[in-house]
Length: 118
Image (cartoon, rainbow, N blue to C red):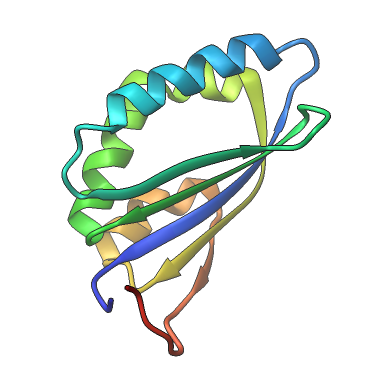
């Protein structure tokens, strides 16, 4: 568990962008599915279609960086055109390199205190 890193991203869908965003989500899920270090990649939406939570879990910081670089190259522009970032929380102990890559998103970091993963 100590090498795994996860995050929870909260975004608000911009007015008139829900259908465009749903298409983007499908593209992102399809693109991310083959990544071996991406252990969990789940999207949740409010009943009114305005609030989305994205939960992602990675085997380690290297897998996180691989995914994030792909996101920047393929999807970042479409993503930011469709949603506004509200909160970005990172869980675990990401490497300094991962922290540097994510810095522009102003994440909140929560280090491991206890627990287990099955």
